[in-house]
Each structure stands twice: as structure tokens, then as C-alpha cells.
Image (cartoon, rainbow, N blue to C red):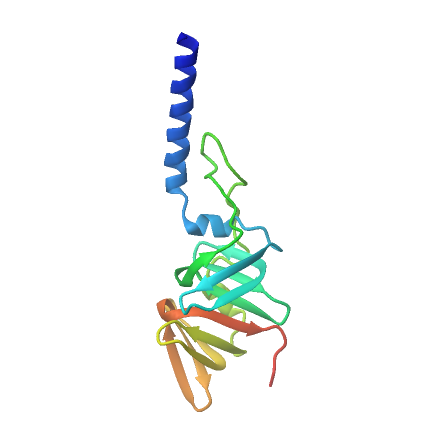
Length: 170
């Protein structure tokens, strides 16, 4: 009887520790732990659905490819997502999944700086609007593109997806 009570106490303590660790894991942690090549589907804040294969994940974005283009999804624009691994931090007593890895692209800005002067498409959440043009500026919290004769600047919090064609179209 005493052993059974101790087992219950140990089990309850382990459960409480696991729940406390789970509470510390962020969505960015789980996105960073995605394996490159995994298939995911995300609903973004403009209510559209995006599917693709993971290129990389980071605490502030997810980069997918769908065969025609790369799709950069800001973390703030992901309303729901399938296929996320369950992870615990490396210092957890009982890991549930793989440790969080370092992303290939550390920020959304590093992804976009690779595309400087290329033609991209930016999808804004509100109002649901798409802007297509050449990327002309990647700031700390915004990006700009030349849409015909005008340069349009978009604050990063308003962006819900950036589509980058795999082949440059002139």
C-alpha cells in the first residue's frame, strides 16, 4: 500500500513538471523544431490556407516551398498549423521530442535580404490585399517594394505571407 501511494506521488510530480515545461514552450520553439522536408498546412490571418514543404523554421517565421515558390509566413500571421512536433527545452527533465534546433535563416529579414531587388508578392491581412513588386528595402520592422511607379512600404505586423517565385520573371 505504501509503495502504491509513493508511486502515485511520483507520477503526479512528474506530470506537474511536464505540464510546467510544456507551458514554457512557445509556438516559435515548435516551428523551429520542424524537420526540413516535412509537409505542413497553415491557415493565415487573411483566412487563406498555405501548404508546402518546410525549408526552415525560426522563432519569428516559417519558410515553405511548394515547387513553384518559397512562401515566407510570419509567426504572427499563422492562425493554425498542422504537423508541429511536440518539443521540450533541452534542459527539461523528460523530453517529449527532439531538442529545438538552430534555424537556417535566423530572421525573416535574413530571408528577404537574400531576395533584394527580386520580384515578390506580399499579402496583407487587413484589408486582404496583395501587392506585387520588386523588393527595394528590408528594414527592422517593415519592407518596401516598387509596385509599378510607386514604392509601397508595409509594416511587418501587417504582412501575412510573402511569396517568392523560384524562377525570376522579368
